[in-house]
Amino acid sequence: MHDPMTVAFEIKSPFKDKKGDNNTLITIWHVDPQKDGTDDSCGWVMRARHGDKEILKRIKEDFAHHLKNQHWFKKSGEQQFSTIGLLTNMYRIAAYHHFKNNQSKTNEFLRKYAYDFIYLAENPFDCLGDIITNKFDAPRREHRDELKGLAGIIYADILNKDRKWYQHSKWHIHHWKIQLVFLRGLKRAKKTNNG
Image 1 (cartoon, rainbow, N blue to C red):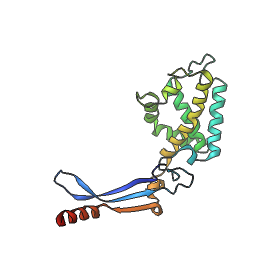
Image 2: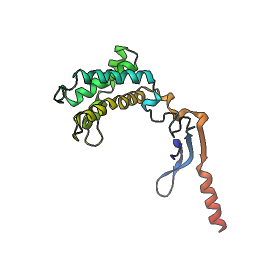
Image 3: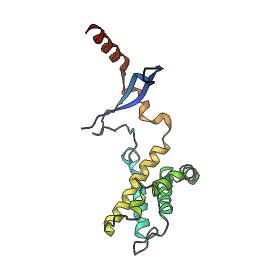
Image 4: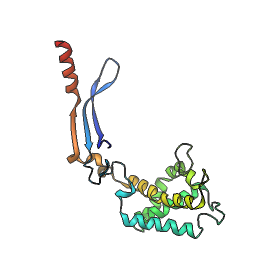
């Protein structure tokens, strides 16, 4: 079982201690109600399951169509585009469905996050480029399934990027638990002085 509590905010002391740190006075926790059986039913980090199931279905169908008709990969399995180009195509399709076929919102989103797509395609540590290029030589069918699976990853990323700041679950005030951290320090100091 996972912990449903995530730190939403910390209120620090305005004064520095002997080590030069600002100690935490109050911690505000977001306690997830675990409505869907997970510790993130509120969507602290959006997953595809937090989005519209019908939109995700359409994205997956579009991905399958492009894979089947060799728009992204040749029959030999060779890429039709660069890794960045392919990932950007995938984002364009997912964003177009997310923004309900609004081309101007889709283009605005793509321009705003272009660097993120490039980094996600090419960074050396945790990138989708490894899946696109089939770096680990997965069998053809398995590789197609991995590519179709990118629909959920990309849709989740779009949901996170498109969410307004006030829609984040850290603002679910009704799920807050407030911890007065400074009281623990006072109790310890009292025990030390009495002990």
